[in-house]
Image (tube, rainbow, N blue to C red; front, side, top):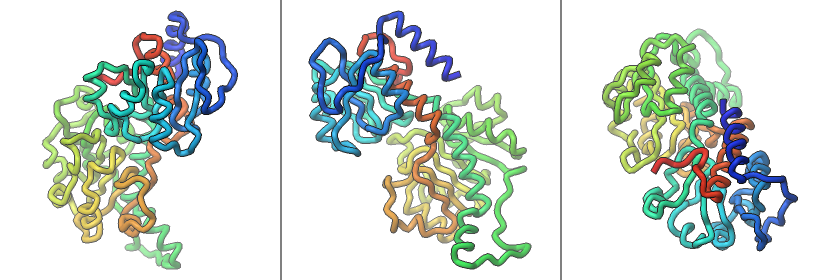
Length: 354
């Protein structure tokens, strides 16, 4: 579906004269002074499908360093017409100020926008794109994987092998069942709904969700909206799928963890700061909850000596939710289309709804 949508948008942009013939590669630091727009891509490892989309109409430049420094990005911001912003470096008024009158559009290559000063973009009515929806499937797949790995003690089992502690026996390393379980999803947006669809194949007993308002899409999936406290108390598995905001910061803390079952598994594929990590470590150590599966944490990258990594009942992966070849290619293409449309002063493929 996303491929068809992208092709349709490309055709539309062609009609508006946004896309033309493919150009040769531009020197990473040489800013074109001709008639073609110039786009800064902040990370040299951005998928080529997105870069090639930009090159059909624009000259593309990159910072010299990898990873790029903020000073480099700020220095180049005033010399370009658009920016494809890759990574979670703060995107704020400082960038827009340095961009000046020439800078016309920015698109992130992400769904989460907690690192963006949305109020500043809204105040200036500056064209801002992002890439939601396209990563829902990949992130939901990771969430289900973490649910199984944490609930069935995969990490603890691997540690036993590494330490020559493979004991076996009918009571060794028993995990939690998924069939017949109660599953709670905090945040029933696109990712939450996709997780719910994945769960339909597991014969779970009950699906609960919490959020600001009822979602007809969730009801169609057999989910029941309940207060968050009830979700925490009743669920065998709890998924976190809400954006990071002032309201959701440390939403999962010592108090909320104490409401969960001792057999419960917590899965976080949203943002690390939604969970009070110190409280989570304590809960995992003292048996307040059974296990956790985490794709996100605080800080990122997580230091190798962080206590979280020493826990046998914590399955931790390094923010890989959207890390599939096709998903990242699609994200790069959508971000590129956003930038091209913004430069051409036409509606973006995926504008941020501020």
